[in-house]
Image 1 (cartoon, one colour):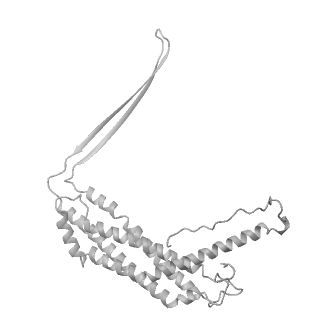
Image 2 (cartoon, rainbow, N blue to C red):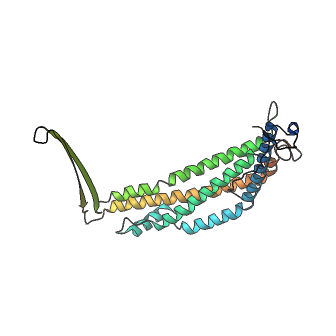
Image 3 (cartoon, helix red, strand yellow):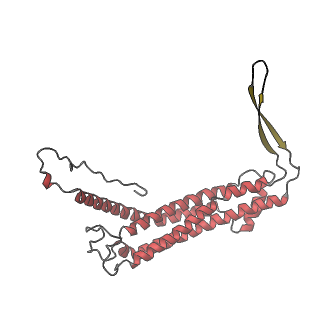
Length: 291
């Protein structure tokens, strides 16, 4: 299952204090047991990784079809000027309401980016766990694997940047709305004052005194009656820019995903068995790999 965490169960081993009637000298030493456990763990992870990668690849075209359909529905405007005009009309007198079109596209695109990044990471792990044991002088047979690993890394980093960049949208929108002068603004100021003193003499002798006082004040400023048309256009332009950024991010992700699927389909045999199916030095039945 994709995204699953794996754990290898190990039963208690009586190494330091073997139970009665067991020949202590016949028991394997700790290093041998740990080596076998590690090998078994890597082999299990390698198998699971291969299964996960093949599942991603087999469902890849269906994933792209679903995303392309979602994009065509959620992104109705073909160009930025059409989006801006529609957004200006939608804002009207209520500049604080959300942009439903951008909100819907925002959710679809960012979910798709996270899905693609996760799948690419699984494909990277698949390749990493199929790298054969290194030989003296070179690592014959891994050129295709290394080229594919670089492709995956580059595409993943681009998607991660898109995910990070789009996260700033609501902060920028809040700042833009805050600049509208017609909106009433409320602020609360709380002030605390403290004083202390010392008195001498008197019938009770010397004494220290202190006092503390806290006061709060709420201020409400009423804005102008007129909405700044240029601020409205500025807000609509910000929404339109994010609309295009999200649209392009998903279109680019679909293209990158297709390229990855195509390269895996063309080179799957070399990625899974870089030195041929008979080679056993990287987990197809042989020893564990060495980086």
